[in-house]
Length: 287
Image (cartoon, rainbow, N blue to C red; front, side, top):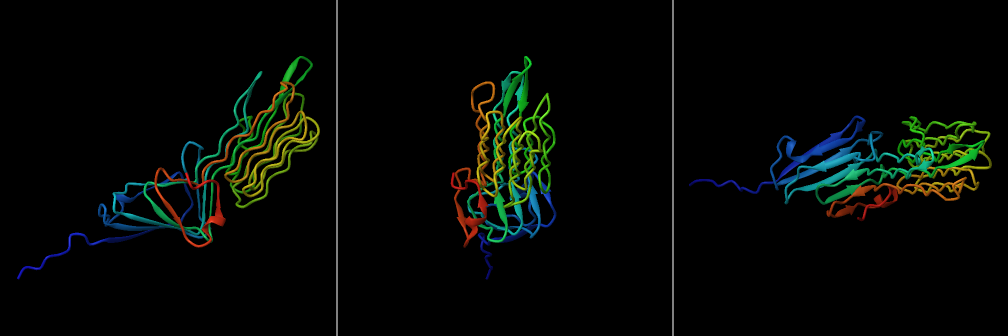
């Protein structure tokens, strides 16, 4: 008698990310043993491992290549972190919009997520910039960079792999904000008071100031601080949080900070959280 083998035998596939990664795309259909619509995939990020994004235009971790019927479980013991937005730019006399934070995790299928010991954070939004008119010239007072390595609005590379780099004291040509870092939850950096550096934060970076105080960077998932001074930049946002607003400056108008990035972009999929995972997710994950 002929034996029949069930055509719907499911495949269990386990994949581990064991080294730090930037702009990582996991493609299910490329994995050895993958069977379309019949694969149960577990993706693990090991403890202490960072999966980060190089740009706010892409997610740190993208999952794709699935077929209806597949399942995905993500066990995150490390850090999945979106890129921080930059402080708003200045091209005399125009102030640009502050940068928005980037996405940490983008889903290509509905998934179960366990991040009870790891962290997932959308990038923080950049802080608002203003300018000061003195001696018939305009000089910028930059907002800080958002959590996730965002830079101030000058375009200098102030974001860092740990704490963000500091800005600079106010000069006759500019007042620099500080960079956001890659520590989560992290502590936001202090804003400049015009005679001190704006401090880079483990999360959001502080804003610059020509006098009084720029806004402090957001700590953890807190919003960046608004400048308490007329001529101060806003602090960069914490993880998944909005950057702070500038003072009104010489233009007489506040520049608002950029929006925080998503922790998880669902892309019309459903996310099921395990245990206390929600307490380790900084940024939105329900849209």
